[in-house]
Amino acid sequence: MKKVFGHTLGLVMTILLVLTGCVPESGQAQEFKEGTDYVTLSPAVPVQAAEGKIEVTELFWYGCPHCLHLEPTIGKFLKNKPANVEFRRVPATLSPRWAFHARLFYVGQMLDPDGSKNVHTKIFDAIQKQRRRIDNDDALRRFFTDHRLNIDQVNNALKSMELTTMMSRADEVGKLSKADSVPVIIVNGKYRTSPSMVGNEEKLLQVIDYLVKRESK
Image 1 (tube, rainbow, N blue to C red):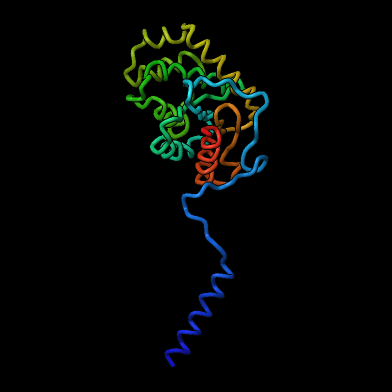
Image 2 (image 1 turned 45 degrees about the vertical axis):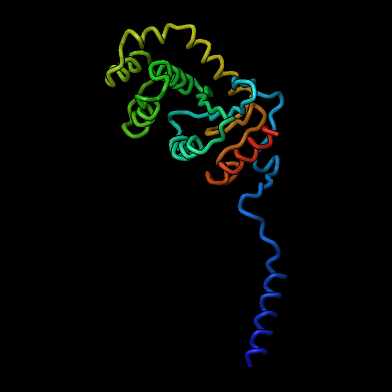
């Protein structure tokens, strides 16, 4: 009886192996398809990363609920990103309102360069959770001074050549990426992908990882 049972169990296991096939190891690289999971940009977007580094850029807008929803995923990416990756946020300038929010982002970046004051998160909260309208320079000044940032530094940032240069960069990235919506992720200036393109944010991280590894070869 035991011999018959053992023979039967072995047969069942053999059948299962034939039906299921071989399962790849979890660490094995997954292939993604151009045109389905990402697109190749031509011409490429010029990058600002140091030599030997891979630039990953998020194109976003403060008024976009999908961009706000993506923030925890971006945080997860930053926590686990490879050492050779430089991450940047670039605000989209697809309309006058979006362009003003780009100014808001860059002024905030100049006032909080290391992110220790959480200005980026506070702007998201003000616009989307508090429904605060920040669409002119006076409203911008009030927002920053409400958060105890120096008014002279705010005014200097608004008048700076650095702001003009940053805004030109945002226009360039938006134009060359050919993005007509946000959020969008650009890998090393060559590839564009997005949560809406791949279907979900977990897969987005996988596609970014795939493209970064492709550029690292």
